[in-house]
Amino acid sequence: GIQVEQSPPDLILQEGANSTLRCNFSDSVNNLQWFHQNPWGQLINLFYIPSGTKQNGRLSATTVATERYSLLYISSSQTTDSGVYFCAVEQWNDYKLSFGAGTTVTVRA
Amino acid sequence: EPEVTQTPSHQVTQMGQEVILRCVPISNHLYFYWYRQILGQKVEFLVSFYNNEISEKSEIFDDQFSVERPDGSNFTLKIRSTKLEDSAMYFCASSGTENYGYTFGSGTRLTVV
Image 1 (cartoon, one colour):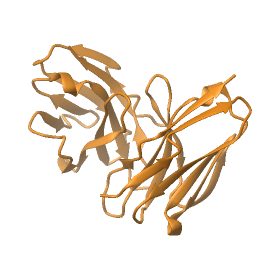
Image 2 (cartoon, rainbow over the protein chains, first blue to last red):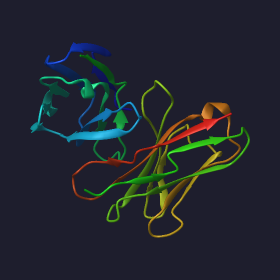
Image 3 (cartoon, each protein chain N blue to C red):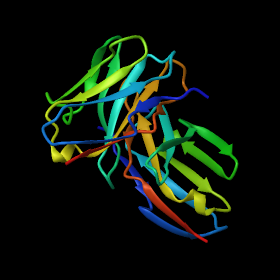
């Protein structure tokens, strides 16, 4: 099956700092999503982004499908941004999401 | 914004008991899924369901597990004879034919004691 690798595995930030999370995948995909798992365990959908760039407030994401990677940018980080960020992809004709291992982000006040 | 609803949010069960986890997918979605996340680990695919039948299942989804869509709105995961290692967060998800991706429910945290 497709391999999804996220880096870094852990990230510690000071409040107000910017950061970039990376997701590499091993094959062509028709769907890529970024999720934030909050301290209660809920998976919050951040972006549906199989290609191109999207922005939502302080978060933005870029997927370069031809080079098989996606980036999630967090700007002016806040303590509420803490949690685990997952990248998940779906291959053509596969009809399921495959998740990476996640990046654990800790934002300190 | 439409939501996927899961009940209960937490369940504690004795080892060997049967549990049923319930989900109400988004009403116009056609594809339904169950995923599992053991504490501290990645989210793993269990099963997908389309047109009233299983379309794919992982090797985790053995005879202990079953899924059902008993009516037009609910989608359930049954775990027979639960084991300690079934303790995990179980997520239901649904997707439609339009390209908006998958929507996940808030999860059911299952603890087997």
